Length: 93
Image: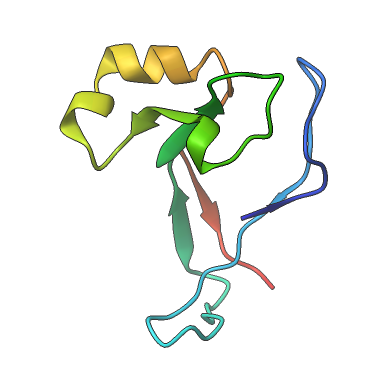
């Protein structure tokens, strides 16, 4: 997924572009009647906002693939950092 900015002001909107690739790393093609489900998969936050946000300065607060981090409480914690609703959209190019 790509975004038009690195950070956003609270309560502001932005552009989010998703590109879906096949298992062979080729851009997938869809017809206009296809629907694509977008769901929150993972939220990673910096441990210390004063340091560079990298692997050593990060904390996973939500991960749909880790049972302990995919609970309702984990989703609430993630909502402190991102406002996101799972959505299904019609594909277009």
